[in-house]
Length: 284
Length: 244
Image 1 (cartoon, rainbow over the protein chains, first blue to last red):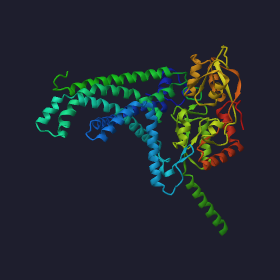
Image 2: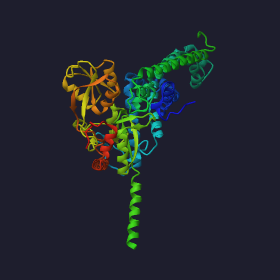
Image 3: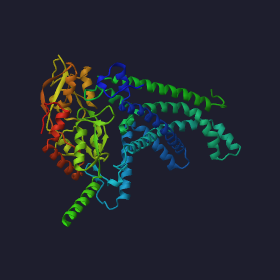
Image 4: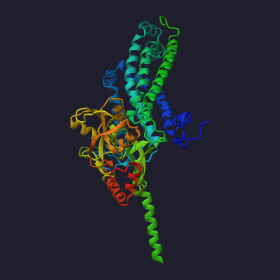
């Protein structure tokens, strides 16, 4: 029963508040909660893939692969997250545009870097200038997913590496004794048992990931913190709904959201741990 | 008779090709946090003086313009790396910025900056704590006066800093401060005199984009001449705002 919001200046009290909280701008704010949850849902499989790949690379028999794994985890874990979040999307974006420029505009021989400017032909822009705002958002979102996957994958690789080492030697020896191949041992014995040891570390990582989502705004994606700051700021008569500085309320709402999210995740991780421990000797 | 038909035909073809050329898409980068220059209105759209002025300029130049939001801190780096094609965000023309990017002719004449503080307080403008937005001409000016500069990412936070006592005063464009002071119910007042800063506000463009710059310069000159810009300035700013 949303009333008539066409003349905000005439409204008062609850009616004003109801209209205020349902402006299209607020809808963007509510939508951004889904963006954050969507990012988490999309990124986690990539983080696990990077983590597993990194962990197995670190334990590979081939020395160069091992070095690559060690280089990845050491380098990414040693550089501040924020530097990577700034570096990876820009490097990826310019890399993609440079390649497209070379392929799509072979007649343009001029340099791509002109002084301060990075100039590619219009057809090589990613996404194209003519693309809709939605495509631009999606592109930014994809770059963000890659950045998060690279950074958090390195931490996950270390956690998984440690968990793989923690699987009792006797289990592997027994599997060898019954004639399983290395691949079979990995699939049937090591990976299923590894989770019990990996879950505490991964749950830590998940909490940090949840709290790292406000970094999204660095990548040009309007996340909940951006909208809270924008909506909460003092508004003059230039706006339909002028109000004083309300950031405290907006940030308070965010606090509740993050607490709820981490609380629900904790319950989820407890269930996962219980499931992974089924039938394991010594586990709780 | 034939002459007229011929001429009409040529005119039609010219108009059609002009229409095709108009398909060039220009991405306009703005901050969206600096009313009344540019802000996000309650519909969630970019609004303000620069939105109206930019849309009119694009229409006259036959450009297809799209608006893009970017925070102030990274607004120049993201222009030169090609995320958008213009900066239209209340950016004053300065020599320092001109080394990195190019500017069109100003569309807002040089207008004063001013200090605002809480009413009834004795503020030391050359020795106190003064707030300003990061990377603005006002921040540069405070650094030269000997006052302690505290920088904030958004204009709104500089005002909040004065209200909660974190800073003694804020230095910003007077056109931005005036509505805030007027609506504060006497809580905030202007202190000291006006401070003339900057060489007017222009659109920022990549240095390699000379063609686009020429297009916008032509349109800005036209809008100055026919009074459109003055009408827009009068609509969005106060009567004290300098006009063309």
